[in-house]
Length: 478
Ligand code: ARG
Image (cartoon, rainbow, N blue to C red; front, top):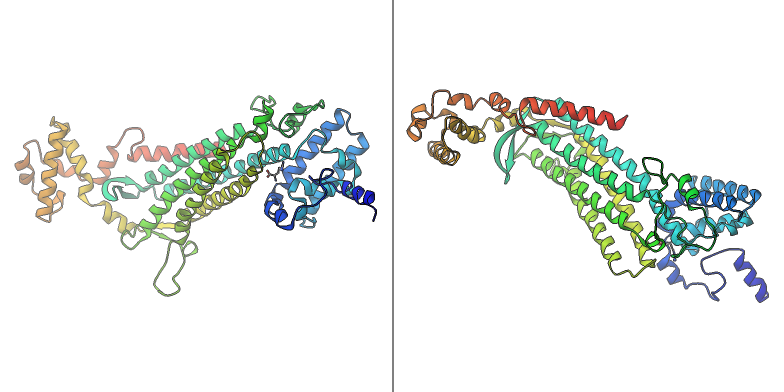
């Protein structure tokens, strides 16, 4: 083959290296730098972006109608082949962008015009934003289902009281539903963080070129509109500085931070479930379908799903730190380091979504061991604070009341007699304000109805919070 023919062949098969390069990359370099093995996941977004870009190019006269329809037809065909797993991905074409463009151009010569006024830096920034927008939306949906699972579980066990803990020591009684609703609140802030991140994701970067825009009269608004980059009032959202637009990855860091908090919340839940399902607590039973056995000890039933939930938190945090570290030393603008963001973000999304989904299923498969919890919550010490409040109601200063009740608790420990079984005289010997009605203080139902403040675990409060959340969730899932 003559040299000129060889060059021609190269041109008909575009790669990022055409023209300037005499040699191809070494096999090592190609393997080291390829990203198509993982960024092919962006194929849908890449095609979506190319379709919008091509339509815009036609509207400003850089493609004629026939060229546009050829490009549209072939891009759609390529999309079908990818979705049916029939697309010939090539590692030597580096990434998803080059793979799709090269195949398009092989089939439709006008494909060679598609990259007019556009760079891969542009493409990758666009594809990641489109991908994040969609995936965050579906993650929010999953979180709403998990909130609904907590709500169902809380409603089902409305009457159940458990000890609440501080320092992992029994502290005060709470409704089981109140404990679950705490997670509903956490998850709601998590959704808020994702929604907030969505606003910053939903800005169109296309048109920034490699870093400095284009000399061509691109219609950025048209592309952004077609791709749905608009705010709540329908106003087009465009990145406003080409250098920032091309190299900004803040939104990925924000997402990984929000995901870290979700993981942290669910890791705390995991810890609760592990403790509660242990023989030591014996508060709940996790159904067989969410537990595993031991290969050696036949009696074991292990909370592996909760442990994996807790364990995966480490890698979600790790991904956040990896991104922050990857970004910190980058001079403006695009640097290939940025390619390292993808696996971290994909892994974070997959991990967090799996954890959220798994836990929604698991929460629906726990049952409460009513005997054990009612015994635990009947521990009269849980109402020692109520006893102090009783004295406060009689005009005793809280510090003094706290001291007096402390003495009563010490007496009960010494006599190995529960607080509610000590004689009235023993109470009165420690403080004259105690009267015969102190036994009522130890009536748990009465104690729970006395907790009336906003946010308190009182009987009416918890019921009304369950109702409020039911309405709130119905609003979001409409
Ligand atoms: N695979 C690259 C990435 O993920 C796409 C952009 C490549 N741009 C470049 N100038 N090498 O960042």
